[in-house]
Length: 103
View (cartoon, one colour):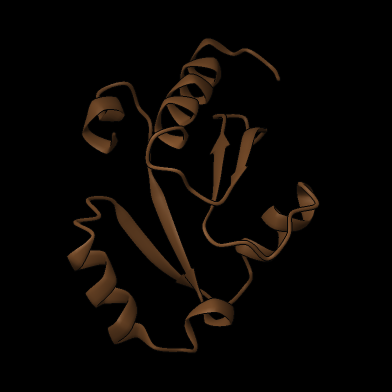
């Protein structure tokens, strides 16, 4: 999906946190390599993830996906992942964000 939207200015960014990864950077890097994650991922001490999760009153579910518009507005928030249902829902939310639609 990363390459599909790159030409349209969409940026994908992964966040691994000290909370859910037990400070194990090697484990995270190995997981990203095995999963063939082709977008940038950051190691976050909670500075980024905590406010995002609090803004949507999210639970401590991993993974969480946020589609954020250029103006910083959270267009859509997903908790968990289903290989069949999550990707099309994320695509729909990205298209809404690109069109400026508000959910």
